[in-house]
Picture 1 (tube, rainbow, N blue to C red):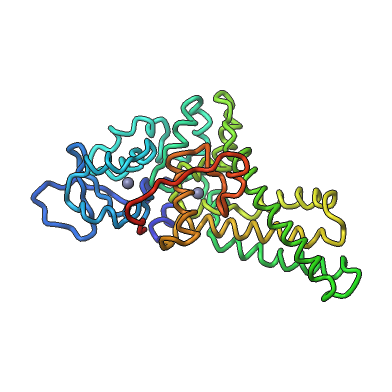
Picture 2: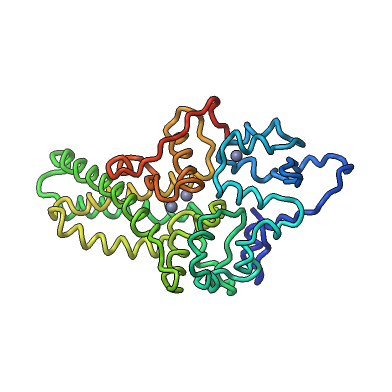
Length: 341
Ligand SMILES: [Zn+2]
Ligand SMILES: [Zn+2]
Ligand SMILES: [Zn+2]
């Protein structure tokens, strides 16, 4: 954590999360802080991959010090997974990542991504294990990162405000008589959110920018591309409150046309509740370790498939409802053993 926040305020990025990789000869005594596996004759220190591995950490434990050539094939891995794996190679990393040399990872990325042109789409869908540095200026950079707790800190008061506003100006009769109506409006709001979550993610966040448009590529990178490029950059995971509130104002104006005045604020509150649950769920799916046969376990696997295998499917994060409705649901592979993250 300390390393990470420090790397954000340095004028230059410390690549790879500040982790330096030193090649070690075979006869060096075992270091408890590393977890070496061999693949195609090269050595990988996957200590920092264990917790992040979409297939879980347990499955990798028996391979300490061993060759994983066969295991990488028998447990099928996507192109994105192999790309991520190369982040952990101990020597000559640059050799194996031709595409990462298209940008200078030691300089701010925002001004570079637009120039990737027709390679952008391929690049952005190949995940790395590094934090993203957008701006050279520390002040600007700080404005672009959002710790997860900012989301409840901002949105819980807004939710209470909307519900309070609904109670104080909208209710004709007394509160108790209105409870069924209020619950109905809030439920509609939550359902509306699940639809927005799906539609925004599929249609806006995954809209492929034209290869010759630096502006659209940069916008795509800011909106969602950076999360796919650096899925382990935890400060760029939740939606920053300022642009979210601007979007919310636009939607709030639209509710006035859709919902009766008496129910509008409750419906808006429902949308905000849905959003809050979604963003906290998204964070948890990336960093939590849900147990097998729980709802979150299924959703974590589902979201991992979206990140690492099927970028054009599996857009639902809090639920799979709209993926089923619109035919973009991903079928999870049957596993012999449950995943332990
Ligand atoms: Zn794996
Ligand atoms: Zn996505
Ligand atoms: Zn994600």
